[in-house]
Image (tube, rainbow, N blue to C red):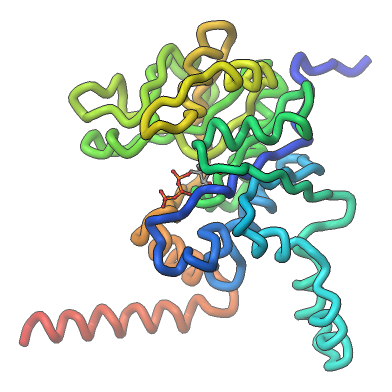
Length: 304
Ligand code: UTP
C-alpha cells in the first residue's frame, strides 16, 4: 500500500503583485515591477514556471487596479496570435500561446489598498480555502539547473508536514534589509524556526539567515493574518503572522539549492540579467564579448 503523506501536496500558488514598486520609478509608473524582463521573459513568468514545476495548477495573482499588464500577459492575445499565424512565425506563436500550459488556471484577486504583504496574502483566502499553499514573490528570482526552489520546499513540506520558509545566508551588515530567523539545528536543509524578526539591525539580528520570497504555508496563517495588527511601516506583515504560527506548530526554514537574485533592487536586476544572458544558449557568447569589451573600455578610461 502506498504511503499517504502527512501534508497534502500544494496545488495553489499565490503571487502578491500589488505593491507599488517605488524602487523602480519612473519605469513602474506604467510597467509593474513583475513585468520587468530578464532577457526576454518578465519576472512573473519565471515565478509562474517555478510554481508549475512544483506541481501547482491554480495560480492566484493578487493585483491592484493599475496592474492590468499582469492580467493581460496571461490572457489570450487574439490579434497578435492571428498576425503571427498569418506571417508563419510559428515559433513566436508558440511562445505567446504557452505562457501558461493547459490544465493550469490563473485567478485574479484585487487588493484594494497596498496594506502590506500579509494583507495581500489574506486577499487570496477565498480562492485558497483550507489547504496548504505556496507564496512566491516574483522579484526574488531563483536560478538553478535542477528542481526549482519551490519544488524542493514542496517535497520537504509533503514529507515533514511543516510549513516551509526559504532562507539564505546574507552578510551580517545586510540583516536590516530582511526578515531574519533563529532556528534549531539544520538537518536535510531544514531547521525549525524558533523566532523571526523583521529587518533587525546587525547588532540585534538573531542570525544571518534571511527570509527569501518562497513560502509553503498551512492555511491556519489566514486566521492569524485576520487578527494581525499593522506592524513595520503601518503594513500588515506576513512575518508577524508567521511569528504567531511558529508558536503553535512547526515552521521550518529551508536552505534551497539555487542562486537568488533580488530583482526588487537595481543591482539585483542587473546581476540577474548578466547571469541569464551568460547562460542563454543563443546569446551567451555575444553577451560575454560585450561584457568583456565594456570592462576593457572602463579599464582604459581608468588608466587615462
Ligand atoms: P516590496 O516590499 O518589494 O514592495 O513587496 P513593493 O511595493 O513591491 O516595492 P518597493 O519597495 O516600493 O520598490 C514585496 C512583495 O509584496 C507585494 C509586492 O508586490 C511584492 O511582490 N505587496 C507588497 C503586495 O502585493 N501588496 C502590498 O500591499 C505590499
